[in-house]
Length: 144
Image 1 (cartoon, rainbow, N blue to C red):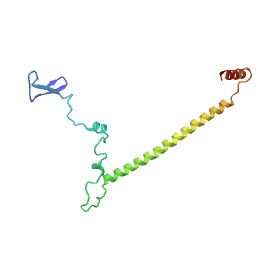
Image 2 (image 1 turned 45 degrees about the horizontal axis):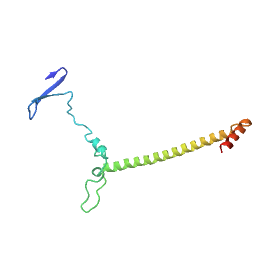
Image 3 (image 1 turned 135 degrees about the horizontal axis):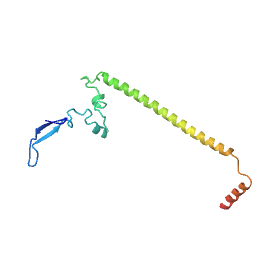
Image 4 (image 1 turned 60 degrees about the vertical axis):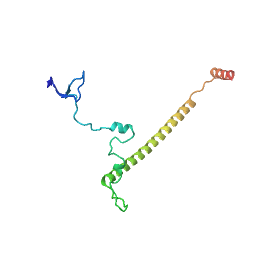
């Protein structure tokens, strides 16, 4: 059936009851037939797991088999590729953390230098003399 631009398909319910419609219309405009591409990813992230099961874990990182006498299996290409990628990421993290530490020390040094410059400028300003100086001294003596 077509209602305007929306196609509706009636179907029968398995257990129609009293006061319950025996047929329900499902509109194709609100019905999705494609699976969600990231099904369960929100749950996995919420529980501290990877968003995708094939990102990391024992099923991804460990070899699929080993020899019967206990020798390890040769390293697979995917595992070797992931190890190289992780090593590159680790080296990037280390270099970025060093850069961050250097930037923080430079910022602290610059802040301390600005404070020293401000203190030097304040010490080089003209001092109050005469009546003002006497008034300040009298106020300081009376308050102590």
